Image (cartoon, rainbow, N blue to C red; front, top):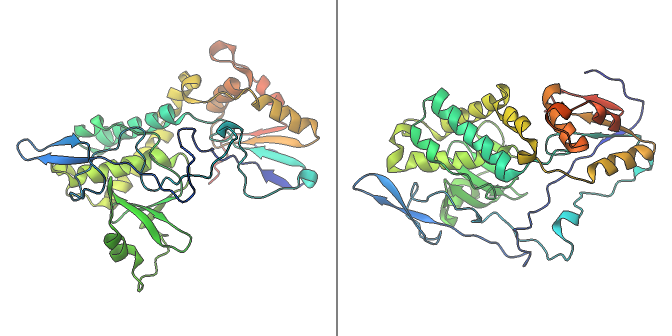
Length: 338
């Protein structure tokens, strides 16, 4: 859909998901971590899961996927707040709205806040299905489980080594995991933090976990690395970690291209999307202030219509209409934004 916008300053209002209420607020200097480890059974080449501290280094391929609620070292504690998390405001800088004439919203993960415990689990499950059926990965992948609260944005994937990294602004690797096994300080120093190395963590050898859509695939990459290194992962021994990531990315793209992911969401939006009763009031207030409001989404019309009907009208199935467009001056779908 094409449109003409008035000659005005535009701003894109982006939301950042607030920390979940499951996080405790103890100390800004405290890092929380839990872990589990596994022992290999030589009799039948299966993984026997046992509870153990993450410090019990048994070698790559020995640690099982974490259980729900288990968090890696990269989860920082935040300063205490007496304001409930849903009512907190998260922003990067103050913005004088006086000269803002138009405000634009994306839909996915902006107006439509997906439920990670269902939506990301669905993305994980469908990506596994593509890897097995389209890429010939072993059936054992179907037994993979997904911990929706494990990953976070801002991590870096080292495709060649199969590592997940937390890097600070000085390009120093503070925390690293190979599969679900934490890298030791010496390993991090040898690979990344030597004084003679100058890594920028860019280019084809690295990938950024910089969107909420990336969380499920990043978690699955860690599982694939863990599986490849284990005795039961012989089918993947010939594949490099880089090839694992390439196949994973292709499988994720397939889920979006063939519509299988969004088809499931459209069938039951309440299961996968949070309903915000204040959303309509926010849009009305912005329009009442004299500003132009527009929607710009990469999603196509059919899916956008389903989601916006649910969010703004509370309608599903035969009750859907296009009345939700009354909340916007302009609506753009299929934008192809980066």
